[in-house]
Length: 179
Length: 253
Image (tube, rainbow over all chains, first blue to last red; front, side, top):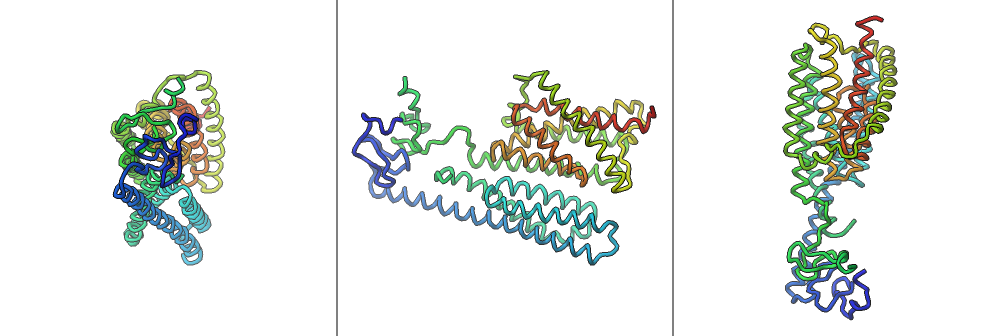
C-alpha cells in the first residue's frame, strides 16, 4: 500500500472525509475534495456532489415507477385470467388460458420484485415479455389490441423511462462510490 | 520496481497517482475503472439491441401467424431477411461481438462433448414434445410439408431448419444480444436475460418449457468459453435431430 507507508505518512488529512493526504496533494485521493482550493472551490465541490445525489434520487423514483408498472401488470393479468375463466364461456380451453394468465401474473410479479434489486435486467425482461404479448395480442385479436392501445403506450413509456433511469443510476452510483 | 506497479498516470493531466486512488491528487479528475462504459455508450447499446430484438420479433411473428408464409419460396425469403438483419446489426455492434467469434482455444474434443449433450437433449425433447402435442392438443407438428414440393426437400430442410438457425440465431442472440448486454449489465445477468428473450421470440407457448433451459445452456457455454462456435455446433445438432425425427413420417422405414 502506498498510502500508509512510513515515508508517505503525513500529518495532513482531508477536511472533507478525513482520509490521509500528502503535503503536495491538491485534491483528496479518496473523495476528490480540493484540499488546496479556496472556499469557492469547496462550495462547487459540495454542490456538484448534491447535483449527482439529486439526479440519483430522481432516477430511483423512475425505477420504482417501472417496478410499480410491472406490479400493475401482474394484478391486471390475475384479474383478466379469472375474468376470462368465469365470464366467457365460449373460450375453447379455459384452463389453458387461466394457466397462461397466472404464469404472466407470476412473471410480472417476480420481475417487479427483482426490479428493486437489479433494475436493468428486470426492466429489459419486462419490456421483452410485454412487447411479445402485445404482438401476439395484435395478431390473435386485433380489436382488443386497439382498444387497449393507450394502456400499452403508458406501460411501455414507464418501462422505457425506468430503463433509462436504471442505466443512469448505475453510472451515478459508480461516480458516487455507493456500491 | 514495486513503486512502478503501484502508480499510474492520470488520464487528464498525466500526473502520477496511486493505484487505489479514486481521484487524481493533482487535478481532481475521477479515476474511471477500465471496462466500465460511459453512459451514452450504454444507452446506445441498449437502443441498438432493443431495436434488433424488436425487428426480429416482428419478422418472427409474421412467419408464425400469417397463413401466407408456408411455401418454400416464402421461407427462403424470410430466412434471407433474418440473415440480412443480423448482418446489418453486427456492423454497429462489432466491438461487442467480435471477441466471441474467435476460434482461439477451440478444442474438437470439447466440441464433441457439447454436441453429444445437445444430441441427447434433442432426442429427449423430441419424444416428450411429440407426446405432449399428441395428448394435450391432439395435434401433430411436422416441418416437412413445406419442403415436400421442392426438388431437394431434404437439403432444403437441413439448410433452413438446421444450418441457418444454428449460425444466425447464435450470431444474433449469443453474439449480438448477449455480447452487447454484457457491456451494460455484466455477463452473469446478460446470460439469463438473453435466454429469456431467445425462448420467448419462438412464440410457442409449450416450447418455452425446453427452450429456456436449452437457451441457458447455450448462453452459459458462450460465457464460459467466450466463443459462439460451440453453441453453433450444439444448435445445429439439436435442430438436425429434430429434422431427422420428422422424416420417418414421410419415408417409412
